[in-house]
Image (cartoon, rainbow, N blue to C red; front, side):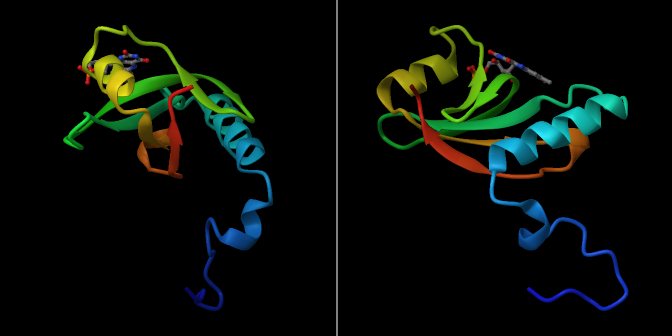
Length: 107
Ligand SMILES: Cc1cc2nc3c(=O)[nH]c(=O)nc-3n(C[C@H](O)[C@H](O)[C@H](O)COP(=O)(O)O)c2cc1C
């Protein structure tokens, strides 16, 4: 995708830097400092063993090189999904706009 000359290109691959974890931490800090409500909210997509999907919001409570951590009840819909199918995707929605996507497996 090309940028229009003279316009703020916003987030670009070039401005992102090589470390997505560092970038996400920086966005969260910026959002917290700016008074954004629930900056750690993220949409979590899971699927059951047959691949039927579901998505809902969770609060990201930890970020490190292994991925993003959240808390939930293992008997919840997402807990049951992850027990039978560890594939999931998470999209942080800092300030209401989706800033990124990540796919992973339950650990
Ligand atoms: C802003 C926000 C944050 C939420 N954070 C969590 C969370 O961290 N963990 C959780 O289990 N549910 C959280 N919920 C509730 C879930 O979105 C969901 O409704 C609930 O966990 C049941 O989902 P499930 O049946 O698909 O597992 C949150 C809801 C909102 C609106």
